[in-house]
Image (cartoon, rainbow, N blue to C red):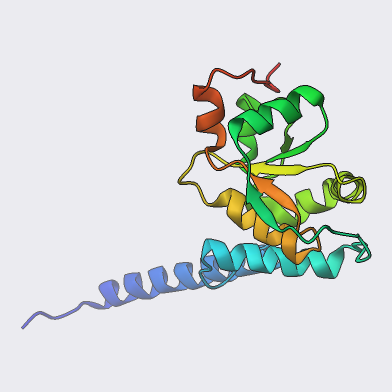
Length: 186
């Protein structure tokens, strides 16, 4: 039988106190963060849904936009190229902002799925203007298997912007086709 010395008990108690103190400090700091971390895990879909809910509560979106009722459709590379050339399209890049800065479809706005509330507010006037003037809104993400464009699409629908397109091949499809790209690197 192994006996535990009093110094081992004191050392263990000291470690427990340090852990409790660290947890308390972490919880307090998290409570004061503008974008505090959640206490429970949320799936990507749950996070986007909560972002949409927050956007609805914090933004005063015009609910009187007249829509064609056509919903969400996929757009071909050829059609997207024509819209980009005509400069009559609002393109949303749903990849994380760092990838947008590196390179993106010409004229695309950074609209990272993970920052839905913030970017929805930032681009609210542009999106509303596009909807009112029936300017196509196109969303893309990294590749055909990426789900970020669909999640942003769902969020836009929930905010009253049901008519838009998804470029399913995404950034990978655009770049591999040899189309022109833009970069925000200086």
